[in-house]
Image (cartoon, rainbow, N blue to C red):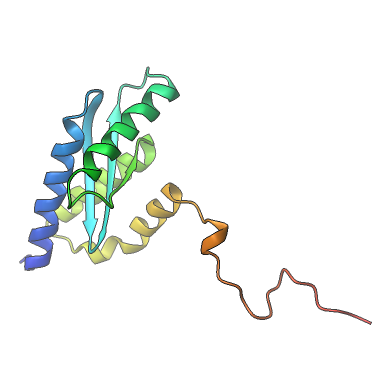
Length: 134
């Protein structure tokens, strides 16, 4: 049996996919929602130039930003990531808990959003800072 939160996440998943699929050039969209994180993968024609794919992805992001429930969604047109998002979505549709896919979703998010230097917190005794030797 699904929890109320899972049911809400599934409704939001469908909503975000519908927004993305209305964008010209998107053949199919796949979304996964987990808590405050939403990831949307889009399938586009494989013959498109990288520039055109980037434009479509940007247009999807703009469309999602206009919706209060989609404004923080991450968008990818990477075929591998979109396929993984679709697979996770199928498992969730079958009733498997979203939490079971947390590490895979974290990996997907990590590939979409690279580590930014400003987000790195300083560590004490960092291995990158050489210790003086005598």
